[in-house]
Image (cartoon, rainbow, N blue to C red; front, side, top):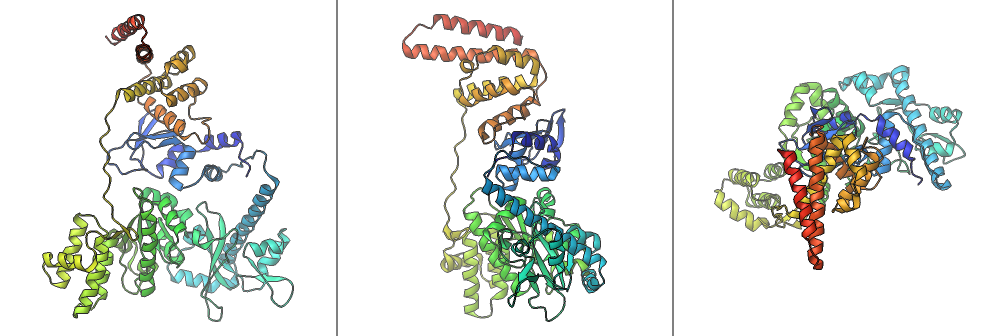
Length: 598
C-alpha cells in the first residue's frame, strides 16, 4: 500500500485539537501556558503524572513512561496502526489525504472499497429518509415510539426503513452509477436464482446501520415487523467489507463517552443501545446477540478498561454472559497487566435494558449499573441460585462451581467474601467451607484466566539510580532547558559538538533532531522512531514547567561539559594516560558552576 505524503501528515497534525482529543480520555487542567495535566489514561494512578503540550501536540507520563505525538496517542488508545490512526484523524478533521506513488493493484483495491463504502452510506441515508417520510413506514415509527425511542436519538444512529418493493435500492443505485456486481458485493442486492438480474436483500424491515469505530457503514441489521418475513433479524452477509464478528454496534457513538467514563456497557440488542444513550448512558454498545468474538473483546478494551455485562435475564441472556466471559478470560490470559475488568449487571426478571428505561426510567437503569458486581461474585451467586441446595448432590454441584470460580482469585477481600457467601448459603462454618472448596475444585491453585495455572506475580526490584542514569538525566535536563529558552538554546546547540557532548545514544539523537526542529519539536517527528518521539515528548512536557532562564541553561550546559570531561578522564585512566590537564579543566568548569549558582 502506498504511504501518505509527509505534507498530508503535517496538515492533519495542525488540524487536530489535541487538548480535546486527550480530554475525551482523561480530565485535563491547565498547569501553565503550554502545559496541561491529568490522570494518565495508560495506567492507574491517583496523583496526576501525565501531561500534554497542546501546541506541540505531545504527551508524556512521568509515572509509566508513555509518550509520543498525536498519532501515537491515537494508536495506543484505539489500537490502530499508524496509517489507520492518520486516516481516523484526517476523517475527524475533514481532510483529504494524499498518497505517494502507489502500486496500481493496491490503488484499484482501495478505490473499489471506497465505492462500496460510498454506496452503503448512500443507502443508509435513503433508509433514514424512508423511515421518516414514507407512509409505508408508519408501523415502524409506531413500533419504535412504543419502545420509548425518540426521533432525535434514532436519527443519531441513522435507523431507517427498507421499502417492501423488490428493487428500490437496486434501481436508485444503478441510476447513481453503481453496478449490480458492486451492489451484490456490498450486500445490498441478491442475485435471482431463476433468471438474470437481482433484487433488494432488505425489504419491509427496520434498518440498523452497522458501522465501524470511525462511523463508516459496513452493513445492516434488519428487523422484521410482521410474520411471514423469514428470520426476525437479517444481517448483511459476510464479505470483504462486512465482518459481523468484528463490529460492536454503537461503538462509533460510544467511543468518547466510554473513554471519559472509563467503562463500556455491553447489552444485547440494538434498541437497548439506543435506549441507554437516550437515557443519558451513551457508553453502551452491543454484540448483536451473538457470543463475543476475540475481535470484539479487543474492541471493548480499546473503548474502556472496564466492561459492564448488561444482558437480558432470560436463559439466552445468561448463556451470552457465560460465552462472553469465556472470551474475555482468554483475552485476559494473553494480556497480563492490561486486562479487561468485567462486572455484571443483574436486570429485573423479564425486562431488557430498553424496557427498564421505558417502564422505570433512566434513574432506575443508573442504579442497576451502579450495583454491578464483580464477575466472580455473579458466578458464585448463579451457582448457588441454580442448584437444588435441599439435596446433597445439589449442594455438591454448587460447591464444585464455586470452587472453580474462587480458585481463579488471588488472596484478598473478594475471595474471602465469596467464601463467606458460600458458607452462609450452605449453612456451613467458614472453616468447613474452605476445606470443602479445596476438595471440590483445586481451591487456591486452580485455573486463572482461561484454564491456565496461576503463577506468582514477579515483583520488580526497586530501581536504584546509578551514575550512568544521572549522566543521562543531566543530558535530558540540558535539552529541556534548550526548549524552554529557545533562542539561547539554539545558540548553545549550534555552538557545541553534539557527538562529543552527549554520551547517551538516544539523547544524542534527540540533540541532533532539536538542532533542526527546536522551534516546533512536535512537528516532523520521524514515523516509527518511537523511542525518539517519547523522549522529545518528555523534554517538551518538562520544558513547560521551566522558567525561561538563560542563566539556568548556562548551568546545565556547564554540567554537560563537566560530564564530557569526566568521560575523557575515565578513558585516559583506562588507557594509562595522564589526566592532570583534564582534572584542571574539570575544576575550572566546577568553579564556573559554583559562581553561577551563588
